[in-house]
Image (cartoon, rainbow over all chains, first blue to last red):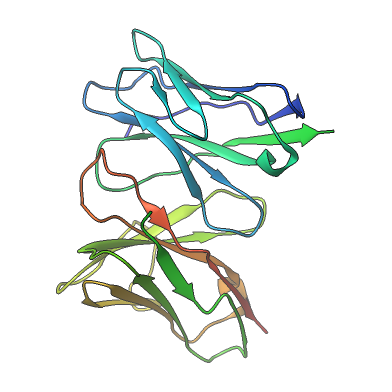
Length: 108
Length: 117
């Protein structure tokens, strides 16, 4: 699986959009981009995934660049409950291999 | 959505004892389940892939005799930490998917916090 690079931490004001970047410059054509988040002492929660098209669901939007070398997870209106570690994962097999993720802190 | 249940949520045991953790897919069948461990302030590390009806596949550096995995049915996988020691204290998490495809999301259990005294 291709390696991903994410900022270690980010802050976001409550009610504002949180834009979490992910670099995956070595991604290959059959690899999907997945986003999960983990709130302290809980199992990871699925957010969204995509291959090459932008995706949106009730939780977030995923913007993948045309060359697929990077992506951005957008939480449109962050709340305090969105404080968590967000993992961007590139997946080509049935396994999910987690990197270090971005610790997002949403503040009032 | 699909639910993966993990039990117990937390367990405290004495050094040298064995601990069993269960992972169940509640509303779907899973031929494959995955076991992770997580130390404080670190990311999840994949330990092994549990395969229904066959032997588990362990990641490099994970002792298969230490971490016994049994996937006896399409809805249940168990991880047994044998002769646990304090360094085995960790957060153990399982995951599963209704279909083993790269474009199908994996669902995670709520995790088991193991503390070995």
